[in-house]
Length: 106
Image 1 (spheres, rainbow, N blue to C red):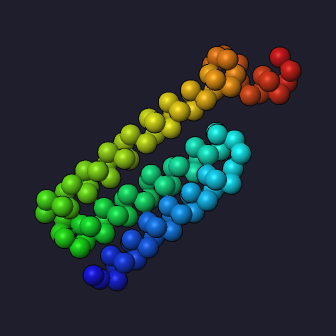
Image 2 (spheres, helix red, strand yellow):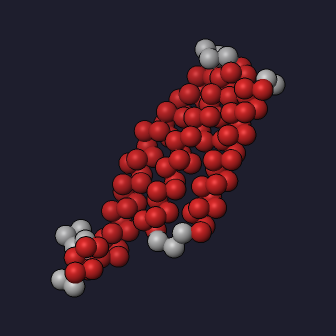
């Protein structure tokens, strides 16, 4: 195993651990969604790059790793948006009221 593969895997692990700690440390669900972004963007991408470097880019394993990372990259913003909408509906009753309206006392 080369140093580049080890570095990519170590980077992925560090990112995932830091994001898990940040999610556990924050109080608000909206803030937690922000820490899921790097976990989904950098973690799987680094692992897919490490797999591709280890086994080759055009092998079956390399292509599958790239496809899985691409699926994560495409579906993560959609899932975050849907989760934020669901939290907002549950917290504020509907989407017409915003946290600013609640802050202003309307």
